[in-house]
Amino acid sequence: MPVPKAELHLHIEGTLEPELAFALAERNGVELPYRDTEELRAAYRFGDLQSFLDLYYRLMAVLRTAEDFTELADAYLARAAAQGVRHAEIFFDPQAHLARGVSMGTVVEGLAAALDRGEERHGVSTRLIMCFLRDESAESALRTLEEAKPYLHRITGVGLDSAEVGNPPAKFREVYEAAAALGLRRVAHAGEEGPAEYVREALDVLGVERVDHGLRSMEDPELVERLVRERVPLTLCPLSNVRLRAVDTLADHPLPAMLAAGLMVTVNSDDPAYFGGYAGDNFDAVRAELGLGAEQLRLLARNSFEASFLEDDEERRAR
Ligand code: HPA
Ligand code: ZN
Image (cartoon, rainbow, N blue to C red):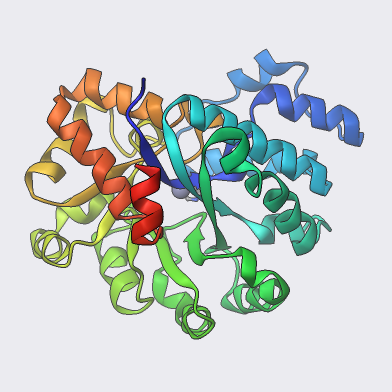
């Protein structure tokens, strides 16, 4: 049995497997610029974050109806459960769908239909985290938060993703203040391709409780000391870092150094359909390539529940 774990860094659109992409394309009459799943999979050669994002946004064209989002989320929950995931905090990118004429209600209600059955069908509890696209404007983020207001009972928190460099956290100060005032939890991607300074800004300006990736924090010893002292969780995604070339090979990943420094790190899958593995695959990979022992793997699993937005009693049940 795979170790029970929580997944805290997972983009639901990044779980779109080529087979489902083609099935939805056919159902919705969407033309994909690939002959078959093999040709599509062969396109997954990424030089950096942007080359991945270009394909990630293009493939979303196949997601049109609430049922499409339900199928996508249900397929993810089945795969995650098989790899020991007991709880998942799931990102979605509403702006990428609104821009294609797919409404907030279609996305949220479509996802919620699968998540509502998640515990019963797959033994996985869930939360939804709405991400703002950082390469869009701050005004667009504010409009998106406004559009989400009828659905806030479904949404636990806000996040920040997409192209990082040149789009610092401070650009989104106002929308994060508004989200906090609405009682939403706050996380943000920072220090994936962007500098350690963006991690500090996410904490100080956006008030995030958790940092997604945070890999480049290691370049700033003072920041590392603070993250350790304040026990700020970092949601690492090792296979993603290899595919997007944040590290050269998995053997070069700073996860062991981060654990040794006393950082509160977790292991997650990011966009598993694109990066070669779900949460359990990421655990297996760091065990095999980084020589992590049973005690360190248990610590990573324990961290994942502690860093989650579950209440204490829910956390005990999920573990
Ligand atoms: N980084 C930034 N934005 C994203 C990612 C990622 O890995 N996946 C989906 N949106
Ligand atoms: Zn991510």
